[in-house]
Length: 103
Image 1 (cartoon, rainbow, N blue to C red):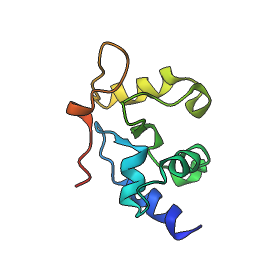
Image 2 (image 1 turned 180 degrees about the horizontal axis):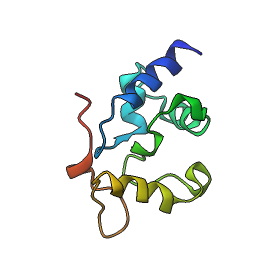
Image 3 (image 1 turned 60 degrees about the horizontal axis):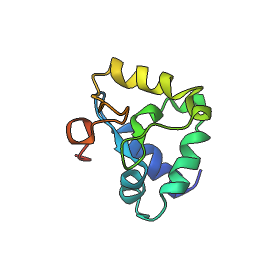
Image 4 (image 1 turned 180 degrees about the vertical axis):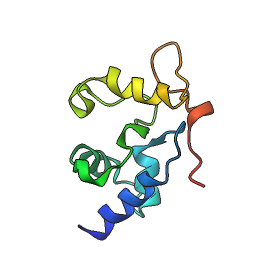
């Protein structure tokens, strides 16, 4: 596992229940602020044994992942709602309320 992958996994592990982080935010925390697409690819390929809360990582506008990531965006939404994450009327995560500050 590369050092960048380790940093990404470590950042994702720190996202508390009830909060979300964006791909770009995770990339920044891992030391490569322009690597949000790489973070997305890493999240899509996380082995189940890692036990990462990948459902807590969303797009910068609060949109959920495409269907192939979790089986459907509904499954990601259900997991987030189960943790108390708030959503806007258009289906995006309310980042003002549920966004993680990284601390």
